[in-house]
Image (cartoon, rainbow, N blue to C red):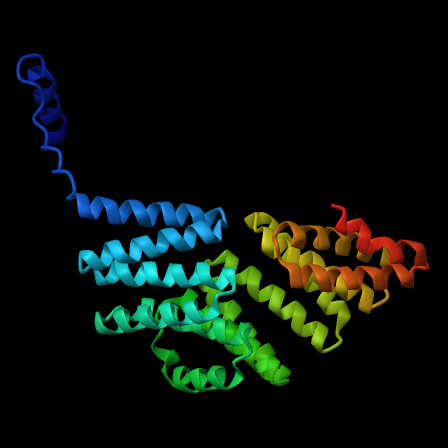
Length: 305
């Protein structure tokens, strides 16, 4: 009972000498404390989706890590700065900072982080409609994708590839790639990734006009997003479910309810384009139910909220 004896010895001497213990580590240098503080505050602001303040704080973190020649910290801060700028719609700045982060990660051999930068660049190019740049990047990355060891990263890359394939009307390939992405996310126990793929599969079913499967998959995705307390995912699933029910001309009162909630949520999230598109679907749903008067005033109803 060696460990018990040692413990008793410490206890018996405590009254006279106190138990021996390691000295506390010396305080971090002020420059390191300042850099970590800026990154911590920026992360909290990003979590709260306060994107203007998050962008300012991430820029400060970039500068603080650069002063320390901490290229890993600088690259991470650049990536997160770009994510905030992407939310703000300043896409040129976001692209520049992602490219800078990728360059730093490549020079320091941080391969997983480099892939994260590349996936973010794919998302940016898809969002901004830069089809030529998107194709060029996929042609460069696809032969290299086998080297990705992180299953979540592999899932993210495949998810973006499937969306690209769908945008090119290659629906069969998109379906196969989404299945592969889901398998990687499941292997990594990445619940958010699985939920996102389910939403994309539901949207693919819509494109194939397979509304029965779209409705079923949107419902599953909604349940997954609710379990994650993911407001954007929940709102996307509500809109998708309402849209699919409307297209199938099935249970229009339920479709109306889903579309109303999605419109309100998109407005709360300041997603103007999505809110407008969902509002138009709601108007169409009301007309399909013979609620012409409600359809005429639906814009003013939501405008007054």
